[in-house]
Length: 446
Image (cartoon, rainbow, N blue to C red; front, side, top):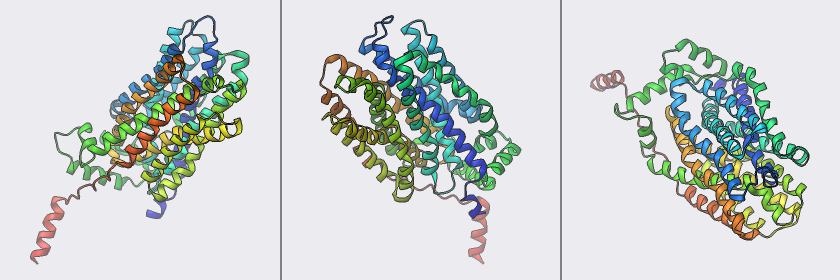
């Protein structure tokens, strides 16, 4: 049985593929905004200032905060499967509606709805990937799914080279309807959470999902029983997140994720415009998004290293890569060197977020994993909200090219310091069932 559980089944790989496709679409929707900023700034009908465009970029991240905050509550009541698929429908329709938005105010609201769906998807997908991963392969399975976020950005960058100069920002929004074509496949392969089914008394469905995924259902049931035994009756999910010595680590993860997302969304929203202002050509500036998101694919190797050498070490090194690349870009290097640094920055932003998700997910037991991830991403989204607006004000202030990049390198360094301070989680208390305890007493008496 142990040998079989350590080998990914076809059902598990289908789940990884589904999460990959969902996250690829999410990656497109989020990265697309950076590619259309130059088009929005030159769109005469709306007369947008840099501050207003920054608020548009922040609106989607505010939506992600709300989506991530509500994800745990919705998943607990309705299940992960309908939440994940419903979120895909929401962000796809909101993206498509942006193609016909009559005003900047409506476009801003639609960006919020895109973020709302994306925010619900991310913690749900992260928890699902960790649940189906074989023992010791959580980071690798997370990386296999979340590499879709980076590749979605690559798709956005490549499409922008063709669509934005010829058709403007509305064509990029229209392309966001494509994920609706995936819904039949997602309905077929995305499973419901086994702990959710067991908690609702749907044992037959849980057994069916476990058989399809190659999961040991009996072990899942025993794990739930052990957690029920050590869980105080008055403690809810939020209390469990802070319980068993996890309070300090939880708060540190919130801060580290906040700084990661501040840098990630600040860079994603403004990188092409910053490069244009520094004298790079339009093609080089739009191509920077391809390099940024292509670099995030390096998370596949980073995930393997995290499983082999420890998540904390790899996350810390990736943070330092982000700070280094930002500082080096402040020197306005030649385009080839700039692309290499931007690719490294992609690993240290979008790729780093994937690694942090896996690290945070492994910090919590299965039952509260979605709650822990959802809370972490909700708090972290505050940084994502600040990032585009923060850069928007810097652009409007006339700060030099190098100063803008240093203003992002400092938060990356602070995030690295926070990760270095994450304590080890305490081992879960071992509980002896009453019957077992009685047997031991009798055995010792004999």
